[in-house]
Image (cartoon, rainbow over all chains, first blue to last red; front, side, top):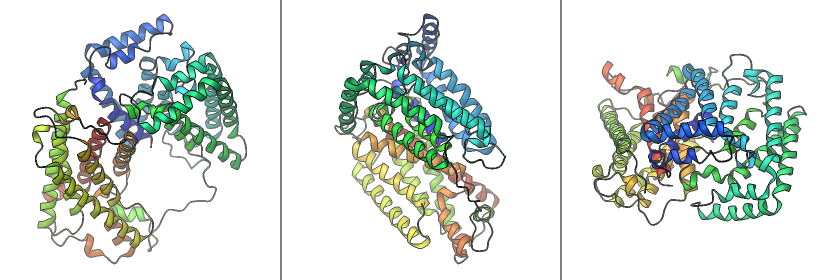
Length: 302
Length: 218
């Protein structure tokens, strides 16, 4: 799934708008991240935008190629670790230079708008899904880091999301409805209809929504320390909540209107939740053919 | 309308021609060696490669759009029937024919919603249809295709994009050995050309190019 999302990002990066020069192109989008950031941060963003603006075709082709290599690299066992390592470095770079540190430094990193930066979740997932030869843990994310560390990562992530929901402009109805308004141009009719509802809800009850989201995030953070059944319930809640946010607020990352570089945080948070889904406690046996030999082994021999 | 590098569309166009040509080579080999499996995928890839190259580079397009639509509707129907037969035969599973049906449906949609390309300009720049495919549908299709590319490369069964179910049937039941055993042995060169890994790569390239074209149509 992670590889598929990286490949989707590579495809999105190849859209014509990102090869264009000027304010309507990729460099213009990057420059648009500077307002509200501290001057030293804005300086690095402007520097990056100027590099992209100097040769948008070359830089954008390289950006797409890197994401393509990460996507296909993750697929193969031999290249999986280097690809995941590259994805961490790339994600951190994009988070700073391409997302303006996710808007954290300008106080606008609400999870409703993709805060603290969708691309950070790629790095987080790369760490959690790092290949490990050891035995299966109680959930996929525990394989690489161990159960206790993985749970701490989960709890910290959701507590950060809770805090970001209510600090800065995160609880401002105008700012929250602005997340929807800024993306609603060019959306298909059904999504525009949903936008109108969510925009109106956030404009009137944005603060309540922000507090409710923060409370839910705290509960989700604690859920991995509860019994398996409670964990599952809160994971389902996390998945449903971020599916709703992804559609109604993030506008499917803006992909449907064209000009998006990634699907925003929704699918990645869902993938994160799936990585913590409690696995069956029943010992699993390899699927076998009628002769009793593992099917995959027989197919490989064929 | 923003400009975009022509070389990118030419690169995708060339890749599509290569996939189509490889499909023809596999078909020929299949006929010579009387291989009973995978030919339908080769036929589909050949038609898709030729049609897609015409979408990326308009000067390479030929034939009436309606004819192409009919071809891909027929191919989609073929793979859908094969998918259903596979499910009837082996129980509920996702047969590999299913993704080829999805690809064929995507081709029909792209042909339906893209007007004739402007001569000398790449198709994507000439997309000027008054109606467009539902963007949500193009995203779902693109995601399925990219997922198929990842699944194909990650699968321990090489050649899964072309004839997985046949092999599976033969292995599981042990009753269809004639399906997988080549009546005419392949020579060394032929074995390299028809390597399952190469078959998979051609499928992956096709999936990636089609996903790109679908995203361009948003």
